[in-house]
Figure 1 (cartoon, one colour):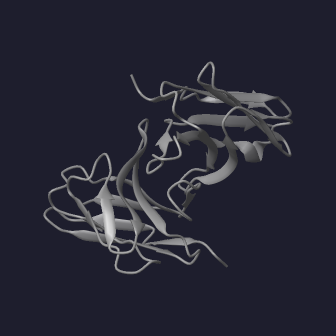
Figure 2 (tube, each protein chain N blue to C red):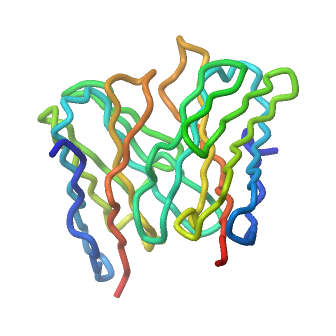
Figure 3 (cartoon, rainbow over the protein chains, first blue to last red):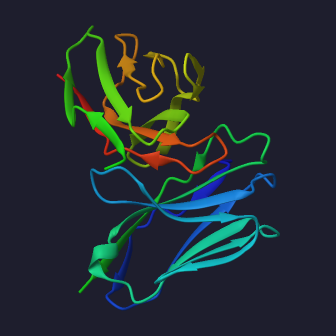
Length: 113
Length: 112
């Protein structure tokens, strides 16, 4: 079993839809959670960073962490064609063992006009 | 502008040849990383360095080598021992190991 599981998609939605992207993980020691967006043939760019449980909002993006269920989510409101990309979740921890980020395999999102 | 640069954007390797991928950052970050990305497999860690003159193997270090002689530079050499080198290679850096990582634009390596 992989430490981090992520549905590869592709997920295809119409413009304006609410998108939900998810990752599950097995290591209860993870404390730091990130979402990256990667456009085709480009490097990943950091979208959201959260510590421990709870929600974090930034514009149209909301990151949610449920440590009791070992489940994290990224919500995109009012999705746009420019949101079409691959979304990678990443996590590490605990604080004394954060040498490595563990990545999900990525979910490919397509937003059509 | 602060950031991470990788060169070249595309690199072609002949059989039995060693090639070196460049990664430079001007963010004053202590930690630097090399990942390999293959379709359907996500990012896999090759090597990482938390400080100058020190580096550790990641999950797939065989066939690769690195050096960290300067804080801003972390070149990766793909040796002839790496039998399946075709992939997208990504360099990243962070202020320290506990902090988030920022990525460069990547180098695509192809075998002739």
